[in-house]
Amino acid sequence: NAGVMQNPRHLVRRRGQEARLRCSPMKGHSHVYWYRQLPEEGLKFMVYLQKENIIDESGMPKERFSAEFPKEGPSILRIQQVVRGDSAAYFCASSPPGGLTGYTFGSGTRLTVV
Amino acid sequence: KQEVTQIPAALSVPEGENLVLNCSFTDSAIYNLQWFRQDPGKGLTSLLLIQSSQREQTSGRLNASLDKSSGRSTLYIAASQPGDSATYLCAVDNAGNMLTFGGGTRLMVKP
Image (tube, rainbow over all chains, first blue to last red; front, side, top):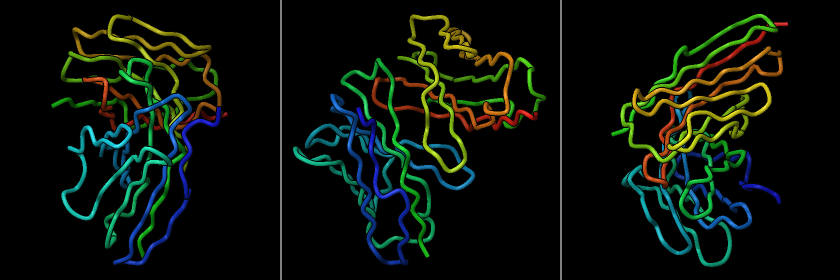
């Protein structure tokens, strides 16, 4: 059981480029969540997805950010036209339906915008 | 809107001490509360999960308690070791689909 897999671990992008972050949930988990940890700040919820559905995107910035969880393959968090303020650690978590057994987090992707 | 506060923000203790980390939350209608550990530059490791109907959970030298009515949880670490040095995060799940995190307690255990 490989746990929640995120890649890449580190990603460097120039301002204006696109960043794609990938997350494969734990085996048997059908729910995926993305969180962002800005430097010296706490973790903040971004989006909650199930296969082919966005359930709650109340924490997503209104522009440039999007997320998907297709029927096949990993969940993708996409940031278009990155800016320096997007530099952060992005964590993915997964859970079985209901959330009553807690959440398992991946090791994160550290995005640096130069 | 749920708000989660952790005190102290930082704590430095000598090896062997027993210590208590505090977490408070404003909305007591929670599904569960989860304590995590985060090492510098690393991901989150789940330590303990307390369901809303439970009062405490134990794992090894760790014990977490939950008092929903007062909006408080504590994480007790017995006989602390240098390897316990990390940031400890408290997170509350209100609706079964989202965690609200506290700011964390940075723990340093000195040999």
